[in-house]
Length: 112
Length: 112
Image (cartoon, rainbow over all chains, first blue to last red):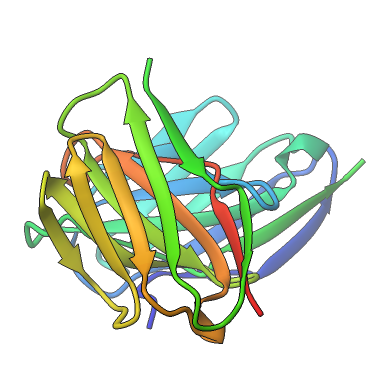
């Protein structure tokens, strides 16, 4: 089963509102990453947060990481219709593996 | 700059036919390479990864195989396709272990 689980599975908001999605994982991690996928396309890397970081910003994106709760959140502020996509978290374990474990994704729809 | 190519973009194949999907990366050397499969509306399942020429790690499938004949070329194959092989196949590369991944545009495979 997937290690990462995002919630909600789907989210619909109005343009200009903030969107928050959450990710939970199960094992110790080196870092956690967030990706965006437009329908029928490849994934695009958004942001990487290391296990010793608690918060990171990139433009309208804010990511938090709580390793004690094994969870992360992605906040998109002032959303736009172009933000409509699926968002996935991915974890890279500390064990030396080259594997990434992807979550099941949150489908975000931003209404104009 | 780096570019990742995948082809074909779409493929419809009958059950029992062979498969060959190709992925190439430009603009970097010795990348870590990955094949993922994504079922409709789901997250990514890691199939294979490779850290060097001829080095392949298999995560899941019995019906699929992968090869890396050149540093920046990664091939996904099957001798006989099953209906369950249908899905969206994504190739990705990373520079570092646990670093950002860069995805190709994907191949939509339908097995009929």
